[in-house]
Amino acid sequence: MRDPSLTDFLSEAGWGVFLHYLAPVVAGDDIDPATWQRLVAGVNVEGLADQLAECGAGYLFVTVGQNSGYYLSPNETYDRIVGHEPTRCAERDLVADLHAALASRGIHLLVYLPSGAPDRDERATQAFGWRKGTQPVHARPARGADEDGRPWGFDNPRLEGFQRKWEAVITEWSERWGERVRGWWFDGCYYPEMYESPFPPNWTSLCAAARAGNPASILAFNPGVMVDLMVLTEQQDYAAGEISDTFPPCTGRWIHGVQWHVLSYLGDTWGRGERPRFADDFAERYTRAAVEFGGAVTWDVPPRPDGLIDDAFLQRLRAIGATARG
Image (cartoon, rainbow, N blue to C red; front, side, top):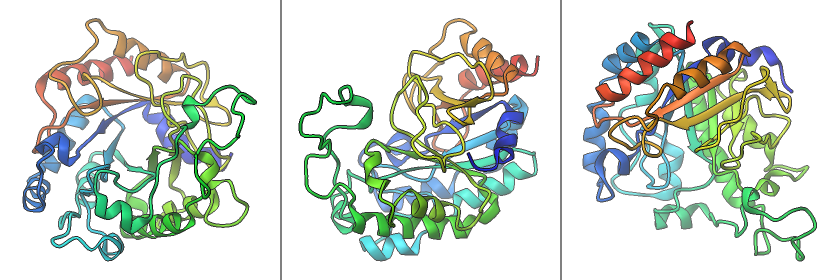
């Protein structure tokens, strides 16, 4: 474990909100660069910050981008590697603008990014040299059951070239944002052997890239939906905690040596839904129980194109905040 006090702010906040502000979520699969620029430029960061403050949320996670290859902050390194004209990186730095609005209300900001290149953008996939493995860690058989012992299914599971390029992209964003971003949540870490070499690129170099602008930034690496909240590296600071339907109880602040943290969604799935999926007060009770033990619970809610949260979900977040405060 690194310095455990780095996650104090997460434990003290107790709960927060996650927004999948992704191009396909807010605009559909037929998104184009001009539409994306217009949407990001129109996000109401002050209005969103007011909503979160009203609910009592202590922090916000926001997606920098995902599989579509559209990102909500500029990145010259990414553009140089991929070469899209026009760029699919937003001209507005929405992360920086969100921080300015949230910080004045005492709300922390963390960011989400996949551990792989955008696999629905063929040009980016080829430019980065990204390939998926064949057997994610969360779907592998018991130890010893995999006869060939090669879950990737091809000769070079490390993908050194990809890793170096992706780390350069991450480094630019981290240095751009500095201490304004308190942490990172890396998705799709399904093939941990990719990072387990004693020589870079590896866990150490990936973590260094994410912390380039803020050495105190806390990191989590998501292996998929796993109720035991698996931790992939000793350099991790908090559990990624992706949960769908089976929610683990919090019995203490620490799990596997890191901050206990669970992330799930209030809508139908990640970033989508018209109303909260829990008919009773489960989300409120679960959050309160975790907070009492020093854990942290993050609830994903669907964003509107203007970045605000619809009333149906806002009401549930208010209830969660009121219950968490006791």
